[in-house]
Image (tube, rainbow, N blue to C red; front, side, top):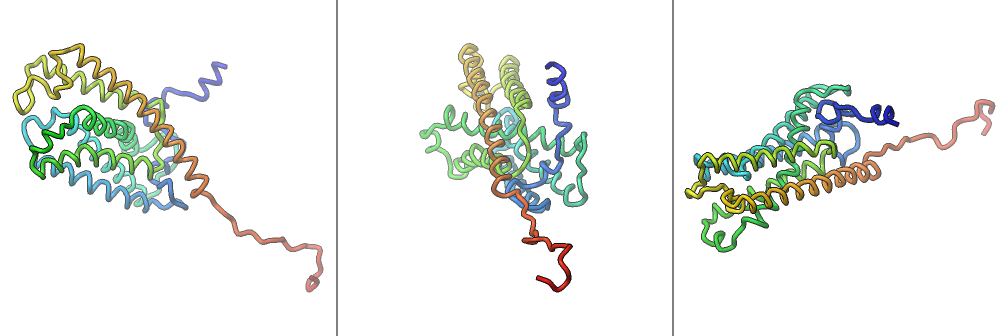
Amino acid sequence: MIKKIKDEFSISDLWVSSNERTSDFYLMSWQRGDSAIPMFVVRLLLSSVSVGILIWSLVVGASPYWMIYLTNWGLLLITLLTLSGLLTSCFALCKKIPDGSDLPWYVSIYWLTYNITISIAIMITGLYWILLFSPALAAEQTAGAFWLDVTTHGFNSCLAFVELVLSRTPLRFLHIYQPLGVGVWYAAFSAIYYVAGGTDGMNNPFIYEVLDWRQADRAGVIVAISGASLFILYTVLCLLCLARDKLSVKLIRTTSLNLPLTPPDQHTPPGVV
């Protein structure tokens, strides 16, 4: 029994270095054939939008505090996801990426970013609209600032969701530690930033009011609830990927062969019907 489990599971499965089919990383779920063009076009559009949003955020909201916010970490992650995906599709167009036990470095970077970004982007959207959004403060914003907030806390998860639904990239439950690790990393960063005397752009001794480490118990509860929510979200996304693959294989990724209705009888004399 133990030997069977060892045969089915290896330490390499915990990392992003191997997969049964390399084509999973550059083919679209909802296509026939093995052309890399459909997913290349999708990723070209996604990367253009993500880079545009990132530039917009840097131009409008650039400040010494830009990097302390989880929202902007999410912007960098979604930009890295779309660009690494585009790079993978470009390599697939230029040359056939062979199947094998070891994935090319650019595919591993894309897969790692994919595992982290898909759930983190959706979490950022949920946390903002549930915990941080204030209609009163939104009414005081300029139109540009309001729409930038909507874009950075809404479009980020939309881009991630499109990549999830249209691609064939697997989302393995074993990789759940990757987005959870980023979440823990940010929580630790916010605590260290507070201890070091860091402030937000309005000189408050916290990055987000709901994550105010002067009230460590409340901040700890927020971190714990967020971690549990991320665990649940990642599980749901894994199931969604499984449903995506099952449905696309059943409805789209099928082959039909044009076979003759009845093969000719080799014993029938020529000219006889």
